[in-house]
Length: 88
Image (cartoon, rainbow, N blue to C red; front, top):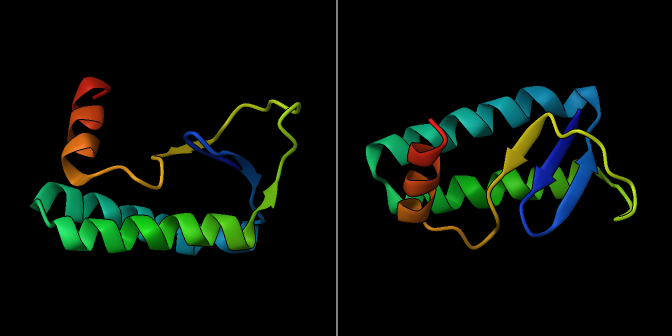
């Protein structure tokens, strides 16, 4: 699976990371929907840390279609809401 962190790059993730990735993504969306800023920030950071630690960074000159696009590390809950509303 290829995950892109906006403003950062692409990572190739092993299949062994997918269950944790999906769990954290679901939790992130729950916090977003609930308006829980602290929970959103915690889950965002955990999700990005998982991708960085479990994934292999792809070189910038290698462009592959991303299976998952993740928000940048500094996105706020309100910015994420606006982003998801635009693309829903």
